[in-house]
Length: 361
Image 1 (tube, rainbow, N blue to C red):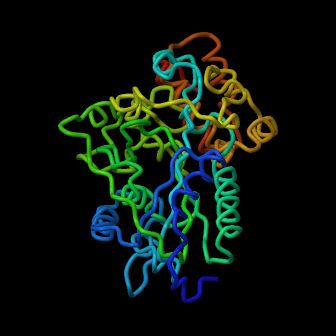
Image 2 (image 1 turned 30 degrees about the vertical axis):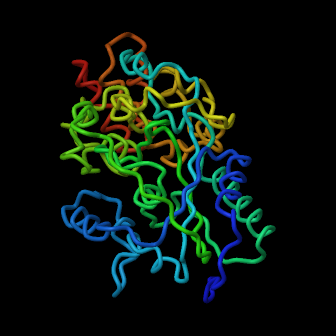
Image 3 (image 1 turned 45 degrees about the vertical axis):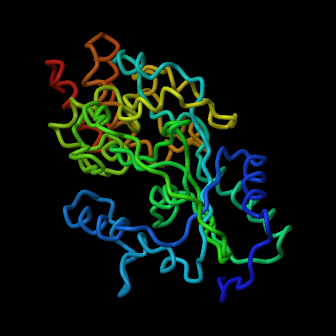
C-alpha cells in the first residue's frame, strides 16, 4: 500500500545506483519520470471516441470523476511520485524477417513472441530491482507493471528519456531502435525526473508506407481495427474479409513498421537467452503448424505469448495465411483436413481459404 510517501530526499547517487542495478538484472536502460504525461488524456480520449480501440474495451476502462487513470499515474496508484521505467531488448538472431515474409509457405510470428513470454520475466526482474532499492534505502512503496495494467508506458518512457514516440506509435531510441520491452515501477520516492527525449523521426514516413493494412492512419495515430497485430491477437471473432489478403503469412503480430524504420538498423541483440526462438517458430511452415492439435499446441507453447490466443484462433490465423499461400497439394490437403472442424470460426476461415484457391468445401 502507498502511504503519504517519502518526504525526505533520496540518498545522493541513488538514481545511478538504480541504473547500475538494472543493468546487472538484464535491463538495457533505466529512466526516471514524474507523474504528468502532457496531452495524454486528451489524445487518448479522442482515440477512444473514434473507436480505434476496436474490441479492446479495457482501453476505455478505468475512468473516474478525475479522468482516465491510464493517462493519470497518480490516479491509478495514489501516492505515486516517481516512475522508474526499465527497457529490455528482445531482438535475437532469428531467421531473417524479410525472407520469412517473402516466402508465403512459411509462417511469420512477430519477433517479440518467438521465445518466452516477457510478462513474467520482466515482472520478476522489476521485483528484484525493487528489492535491491529497499536494501539500500529501507522500506518504500512501489507497484510493478509489465503491460499488465492501464499504463501509458510510451509516454512515461519518453518523459524518462528512454526514447520518443515514433510515427508508428512505438517508442524509438536512436541507439537501439524499437525492439525492446518496457516495464515500470510506480514509487513514492522523490526522484528527480530525467530529461524527456525529443522526436527524431523528421520527415520520414517509412513505417506509414510499410503497414500492410494502412493501420497507421496518420503520423502518431494507429487504428487498431486495421492492425494485423490486433486482428491476429486481440480480435476474437472472424477477421474482416477485405483485410485477410493483406495479412499475408502473418499469423501472430506484425513487425512491418519496425522493419521499415531506419533506426532499427542499429538495434542490438538481446542479452536474454529466454527470448531466443522456440519450436523453430522463426522458420516453421504454415502446413506443419496447422497440423498441431490442441494438446500439442498447449504443450509446445507453454510459457509462450502465443498461447494466449488459444488453439481456435491459432487455426483461424493459419487458415487465413494458407489462403494467401501458393496453392500446392500439401496446402490444399491441410485446409481440407480442417474443413469439418468443430469450430464455426475455423470452418469459415478454411472455407474462405479454399475459395481463394478455387476450391469448395
